[in-house]
Length: 255
Image (cartoon, rainbow, N blue to C red; front, side, top):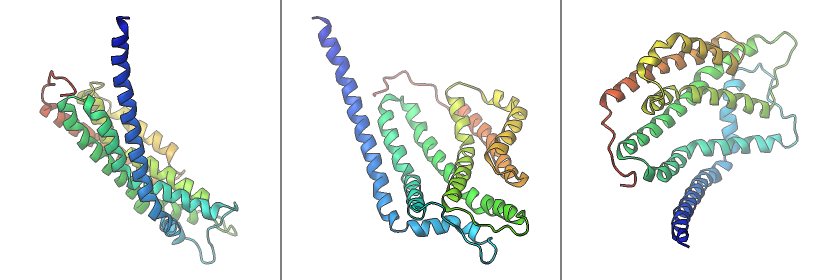
């Protein structure tokens, strides 16, 4: 019987954490829905905007096609949902931050928000880089390589999948500085160790670019070169943080 109060004390904090987690998830979903509902009215315009880099380069008389019955409706709807999540991403990350913040030390809390904000902005920058620079280059290469007598008529759903793959590749590649800073702050590696492995990283980013991008050298370079430069930026940022990081405070995380 003496163990029963301890068991109840353990269960109550667990229940409180689960309730808080549910609240944060619900708020994140509501935020996404608030953005999604108006976007649904412009789903067709969103897809037209996304397809512009290809449509501008199509030969006269060519157009995009839908090979599935529901594709003209489902594809723009899928795009609207993805755009809604991307726009609501800061709100979703804030809910994650609000859930984990009480368990962090004060010096950790000072770093989390800048890391989340910079990571979000870098992801957006990677997507914008892919849309405005990479897609026109890739499509120009593909259309210019089309054999005579072959009509370029891309399926709408296949186009969306292709573009999203590139967006994810460039978005996560641009997260390189954030990933490096996190590894250094957690003690997994040091800036000196990262600098000593530049040659391996250089080979690695080119291999990853060859896998993630279409089979043309230019688009691979457009992913590998920024990724490596951002690796160098991450090393510089981690060195600065290590020099300026305060000594960890011996305090209760809840304080």
